[in-house]
Image (cartoon, rainbow, N blue to C red; front, side, top):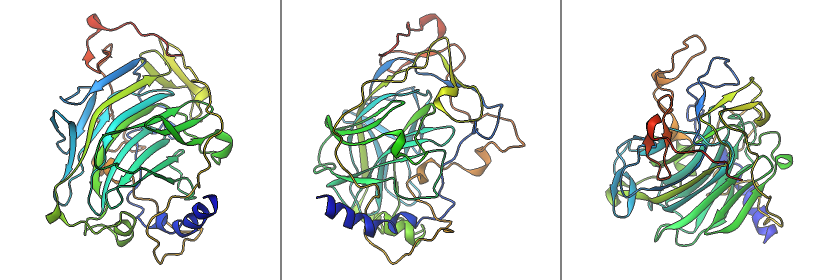
Length: 355
């Protein structure tokens, strides 16, 4: 099994280097580059969100829709990339989503955790392959190497809801499918790119196979996308989020981007639970359809998985423009109930540490 994975990985390194450099992660304000970024609103508790109706814990883009099956992220035409982004952050924790991936050549379904420093932990599904899912991680937005992703057997990902989990602590990241661990990552094995700063939760779908995209992106997504066969919908029924830390805000104490520099307002930073032992062996590099591309050390290409999270350039915070009108967060003093409802200070729940 390991030898076959290694063989697949050898073919795959090229597939990861085929998206234009413009399709990169972004941050409204990166605390490793600025000292005046606003604090992050802390979840500071456990919430269980039912997506059969809209949750005010999330900011929608691209018109997600709601019914008895949960929230649907539908790609029907060129340019569609519906998504939800949490208004709060967690600092180490466990996130489980009940999700059904979208079908369709070139369609990408995404469940992403991402920080202001561009730390990132992902699950991603390619609509052309209903039997696999990709796990991935990035540290501080670095794309100098392309050996972080791995594909896992995931039969039935498009035919019914399954539970996908990320548990993230200071010592380990664990990816699980229906409670079964398929991958772990420890800091010593992360090439100095271990994710370790407060993260938002993002959910969405998009068309990597859109004919307007770069050829490499279309190839990576196993497109092109034929919209006449759509619409294509990813669905999320519910989301369980456990913030292992507590408090109302997470503050960067310096510009190092290390977890030890993160401070909690009104609470404490908790490193997390017990590591999983005997982790399954997985190949570091994700696979895809092999393509005729030879990566080089000077390549300016990066993987395209972050495309839905790139805003218009006018919403970004530049080094010379200290305005944060687009910065996510909760109103001052407001918190979140157990169901994910944003509530005013007079109704604020009591925050308890999750140990």
